[in-house]
Image (cartoon, rainbow, N blue to C red):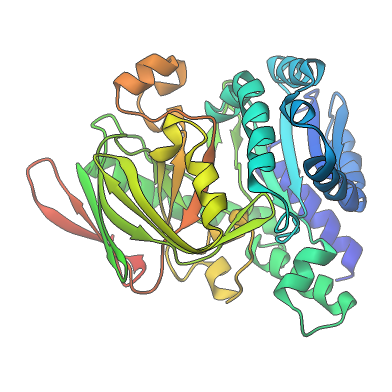
Length: 409
């Protein structure tokens, strides 16, 4: 199969399985300028599928870096309201949103974390209403990745530039099932497998989860009205979409004040071009009370200082160690991929849809139910072949959910 054929299959997968684009539906693409060839392929197929229009929001990592390094503090804090309103209006119109990521893991390693934090806080605050459309699944959305030269070089430093990019493309095609004869059908089978796990977890409704691994001894309380999700979900119009390509997880929300113990990372965390590695978090009554990091301590510190909710967990996600992403035996330095190679948790906001009726609840109502709210949502990886997880039922019975990193249910 020639390269163009695979690119077309990938674009079709993103549109047909990812956002599941409907006829006469607007499509909004957020993408770096380096991803232009893929964006053009997506747009061409989207119009063939009957898209009402395709709107692209371009970005450039080098310009972003220049802004962080040279703009005034006032400028970093400024958010263009017309742009925010435009995203909200397109969401209200029922648009589907596709984010195309071509990351550079080391982009901001020499940039002052304080300046990045100022900008991120301003953006997060301004985009709260738009983010609600996403987090409550009112609209379809999906995230996919394409290689950047810098990202590929990070993964394969021993290869030539051409071989680096080709190798990363092959990784992407493998974990997104593009290499299958019929990628769409392969995804349908995969979604069915995830739904079988969801059925067990949503029937059991465990009261607590207990995580044990080297450097990890953590207990997480789950709400009585918990909803486990995975693979995909229905938007407000009843259209089934798959937000992450790849995705291997099933996830729910913890009780905000019900997390106790210590958890250690098993993969690096890439935070806006800064790496945080070999870190641990200690929780007491749901709140981070202590943390360590061999690399990126100040970056992690700034993240935890974002707001009150950034000190609490918003997501609990289970992924088998033998997932297709894990089998690549590559640390991707990209959360979309690394989180699907490993069980993970998320600091910050929970998805309201992880609790019964949560999509219609206000922030105050969610907090009253023990569901965390925050301006951030940052996944970090804690899974390994040494991780075991037990679930405790309402009557105190403990049952194995994962043993040595693999499903026990």
